[in-house]
Length: 338
Image (cartoon, rainbow, N blue to C red; front, side):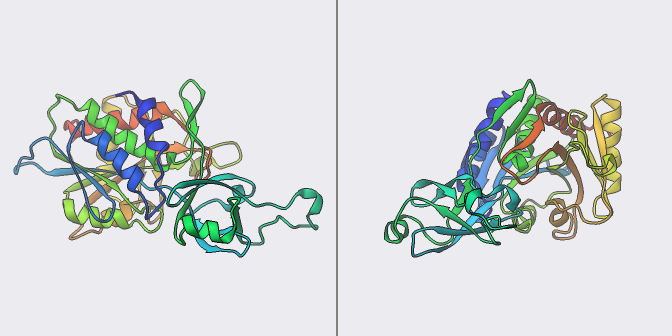
């Protein structure tokens, strides 16, 4: 598997929460090389890897397929689109951005701004509301755009240097890529588990797809692969990971400590770089819903360090995706019992 190519294909699709169809189709296509694939009405993508054995436990590998964006809430008399965040969008980066409106056809627009020459003191031009100029009258706009259509700040994946890349939607298409790469590493290998895959919808709006998907799969243990904060310069090292130093293995009251320890031992045994991410309660990831579905699921998080979360210029180190995939593959082969 060509990691950069796969990640580029995943990131270039539109998949704002609740409207993940394009991203789901691409993920399903990529997953079909390794598993029997199906989808559901919710937008989740499922994969069953190989023939399952009733005598083995089921290991679910999960990552969310949706991304943050905006949603159209109103069309003004002048033809501007009023938008609001869909997911935890960092609103500081919206003003004067070029965007794509995913309507009956994809439309290019720009988020309006007041020129600095015309701004009053302290005025930023948004006043808590954001509008997109698509160069159309209200009548024309209403013929193409519907309330509820999603809006994305587009930014294609670019290589900054060697293994460092930037793009929109690395949260969590990098997690999806890590799961796919793990399956690639497991090709022709014997697994200690029945392996199922869930690429979940609507994580950014309440971890909804993870709950419905886990209910369907009913795994014994689960690995939620997501991203977490990477240190840039001012943040404290005790609350951030370091890019290039491996997956951040989660430890939290809401996670299975037995499973966290098993991944730590696997990393140590196979000399795979890793970091620890200690959380004091919930994780803020799909793991929170996975772990309490049905009668409960032993769950751990593996997080890829990421800079500039919930912006169009997220940054990761490709080596961390590879380390994460290697850790999953070694664990799946029974390198450390739980």
